[in-house]
Length: 115
Length: 113
Image 1 (spheres, rainbow over the protein chains, first blue to last red):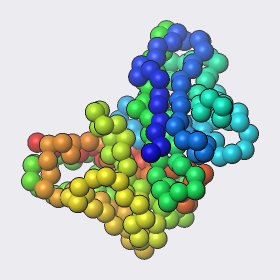
Image 2: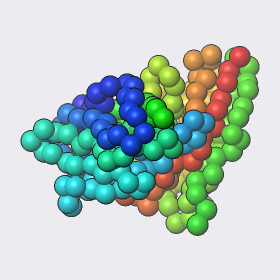
Image 3: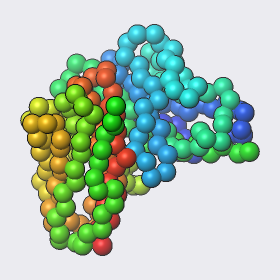
C-alpha cells in the first residue's frame, strides 16, 4: 500500500534560515503529491501540488518543492524562514490510476522558528 | 468565493451518544471527503462522497457513517460514541479527485467524555 514518510517530527530553524522539510513516497508509479500546512486549531491549507508538470513546484508564502523520481522524494523548501511559518506541515499523496482518490498523509513535521 | 464550512466548530458529547457533523463544500465542488485527525494516528481518511454516492471508504467501524445531499452538502454521523472518537474531524471538498487537490474546512473538534 502507498505510504508517505516525513523525516523528522520536529524541525527548528532560526528566522532567516533555510527551511527544508523532507517527504518520501513509497510507490513505483509517482503519485500526485501535495504539501499542506496546519496552524493551531485550524484546518489544512494547500501550499503546493505536483501533478506531472514541472518538477520544481512553486507554492504560496515563498515555499517550493522539487519532485525527484529517482529518490521518490518531494521535499519542501523555503529560502528564508519567517516567524509566521511556525506550524505543522503535512506531505500527502493521491495514487494515480487506482480506484482510491483519497489523500494519504504523512505523520507531519512541526516547524519551529526561533527569533 | 466562500470556503469549506464545517459546523459546529466544537462539540462535547458523552460516551454512548451519537453526533452529527455538517460540511458545506465550495460552490461547484462535487466531491466531499472526511478525515479524522488525532495525535496518535494522525490524519486518517474516513469516506468520500461524489454526487450523493459514497465512492470510497476508509478503515473505520460501521459506527461512522455519512451522506451527501443533492446540493453537495455532507454530514457525517458517529453513533455510540467512544472516548477514542475524540478528534478533530476535517471535511475537504474538490471538483473531483486526482490532481485537483482538496480544500479543507477548519474542522469540528469533538470531545467525548
